[in-house]
Amino acid sequence: MEGFWDRENELAHIARQLRQGGFGYVTGRRRVGKTALLHRAVQRFGGIYHQAVEGTPQQQLVHLVEEIRDAWPIFRDVVPKSWGEFFRLLSRERLPRLVVFDEFPYWVQGDPALPSLVQKWIDHELPKHRTLVLVSGSSQSMLYSQFLQQASPLYGRASLHLNLQPLSYCWFCRALGYERGDPTSFVRFSLVGGVPHYWKLMPRTSLGRQVEHLYMNPAAILAEEPTHLLRDEGIVGSLPKAILDLVGRGVTKPSELAARLGTVQSNLSRPLALLLQLGLLHRELPFGESPRTTKKVLYSIPDPALAFYYGTYLATRSRWPHLTPRERFHLLHQHAARLWEQYCRQAYPGACRYWEGDVELDLVAPLSSRRWLIAECKWTQVRPSQERRLLEGLRARFLRTRLRRRMPRVSFKLLTPHDLLTVG
Image (tube, rainbow, N blue to C red):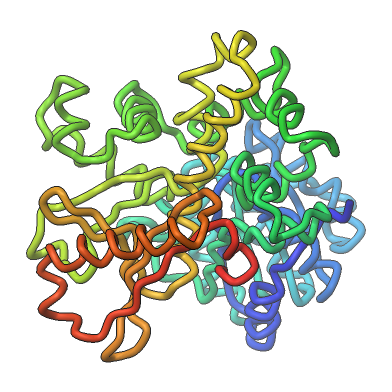
């Protein structure tokens, strides 16, 4: 199986930035394919790639010089004693079109003064070269702190920021050779989501054995992955982890989270903000409402693998061996159904959930300036007679909401596994 898929838009952005050079950074969750993209960019456009290691600055400089001395002769006889000396020597060399420093946060951990040195070099030396320097790393929180906080020396220096998102269900099917219209393919996707590294871990076997291999066996690979993900992001303490656990189990309102955690809602502001910034949580408002005018909020876990871990794995790992095949199928069905709702909303620009009182609509989306779609997302095959009844119920729920006054032209639709080929 090939190890690189899609990312042509990101490569096109790099190609455009190469015309003028500059400085940029690549972010994205663990295992999403940042390193693969950077390798492909160096292969396609030419340049130098180096992946930093954890350790002291002296160790890191030795590793760096060992890899770059063939490209930059000045480092064949000299090993810099500090980052300041490295950048002074680098300024004497002719730089290629593209230079990539992957796992950049490791360098910053070893020497917190490094961002100031990089800033000085970017401001005074890099403009002399038509070179694009890209940095990346597994820790999104570290990169955000270096580039998005005004107090950071590197704030405002980047001319390019690529934030890699997980790949689509369509690419999952293409990469692994599954039929896109087969509901079982979507359930398989719900176990790993759009993270290419996870795709490589899936054995070519039945769905049940894939669940065992990825999560339920004693040596299952993805059973420990969330621990590594949170560690890489520097998430410490029990509160953020408890929030993820509760949201995964269906506790989605801030007031309910605070009550279950035995604290006041204001104490959740900082951990929630961190989890949102890192993309580990998604914050939803009812369709058409603004955070300035509503206090209605629901939280969800957008990543399918993480949602399975917190919503299914943690709750069933001890009793999974004793469940019947029917009970296991039911749990997988429930997880896929939750993901199906998210998947359908992502397929329609501007789509959101809507809730008001005891009424909830799975999907409300604008089709044009005067037409809207109201849909119910059901992860089950529906007969024509059932479909008519469900659509009538959907229409009745819509007429009980305030939306009916704002949306005179509405189409009602039922989205089921039959729509796998048309949704997305």
